[in-house]
Image 1 (tube, rainbow, N blue to C red):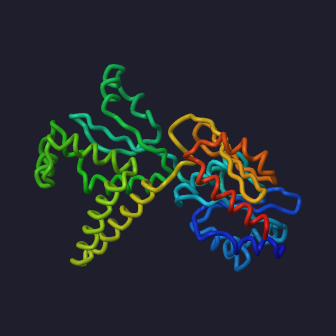
Image 2 (image 1 turned 120 degrees about the horizontal axis):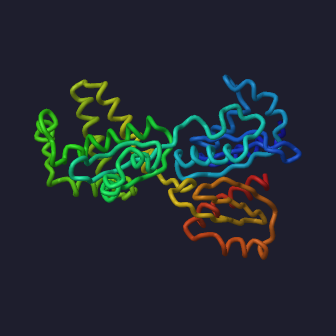
Image 3 (image 1 turned 90 degrees about the vertical axis):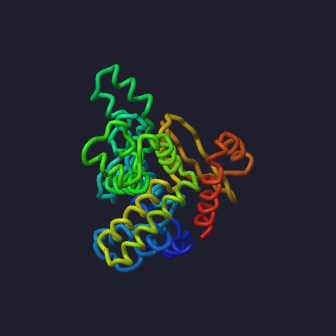
Length: 319
């Protein structure tokens, strides 16, 4: 292990992101993700614990590179995308990680409104007659993709707990009708509830804050009456809501292709966005004049992400 690589680790931010180790010849040895880049990467120079098999690799590490992300969810997606594009020799996990890719389907159909988790954006389309499918599509909205089926199901549980859209059907009977009455929900609330759920999933700050506040109040009330199992469940739902509403742009629903670049102190960092997914990451020495044409082609929405990571790359390169 070189002192340079260890010094670079100390310069990393305490932010979520993806990191990779290179050897003296520039080959990528390993790629991983972190909730805190600084803590995670620094840990490789301590007791490796269940990562003892990486000891030999660490003897070859000459350089650390990293991309700081806006959320842990974004870091998870970036790691998955990069590993699917190319798996370094010291990565043992299956390419793309362990989490399942899912979508949230929101329906405001008068008969069957609700929020469900689906494994494909149009999964339901194969299950219905063509005419019925067309009618249903008019009422369906899809949000995602998200990583982590369990996390997303917990988020849907939290959404439904506060915004019981599934009880706003015009065709309820029996126990479900009784539950709707207990929840104070009727078919007249369907559009309002669906729009509020959509606003949460679009990351509208006011809608997300209101939902979290309601779940926190319910969690604290459950703790107050010693219903600790319910309180724990509510805490999981709060964390899951944070997961699905956090900033995440490295995997999107569109099919756009972009080249995203940032430059700082002679270092150009480039990201390849293909079919809406960030699948490539390179960085190299580059003069300001040459960098300018790359920066001009970067979509404005990506500029802060690219610039922040160019500054990080320059800081690590200068270490």
